[in-house]
Image (cartoon, rainbow, N blue to C red; front, side, top):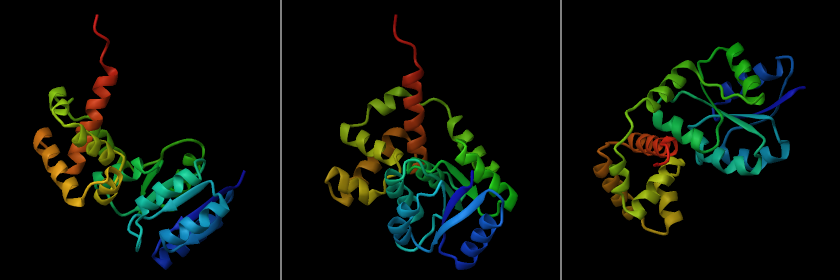
Length: 219
């Protein structure tokens, strides 16, 4: 079966190179390519591709937000973030938004085609460097349960939205509070969890949830 692919990339040379790679490989077909998230959101649902290659740093709406808006429209379409970003926050945000793969742009062509084939078959391909970062984030010590329990209900809600990849403005809109109020909640979250970044806060939140789900019931 031919794997249909859409490409979202604002660099015209990179976009053309990816399209040639996909169309030139047996069993693959590039059905559309887009220079912006706005164009992608309008057109990709018509093509219903098997896989989308998505850049993060796009003009206007970024690739993470594009993935978040696209996924509910095309739940069967798999999204691979194809980017230069290696930092953990971008990785978590992309996966929370619905991406099922995360590859770096310097990935060799044969590996990228293998990643497209893998994600279409149900896998979650990631560049080795990215996979190591995710493993390291989940190997952090289990957080003190009392830290998470000390959060107020509103702070807990903010942290849950952060873990889902929401931007600060989106959190403000969802909770119907001001942007400044969100910043205040986040400052309190950092203080209570003894962290210094969104990524560390989310990692503690995910670790706490894993601990709760894995803990045996009391006798």
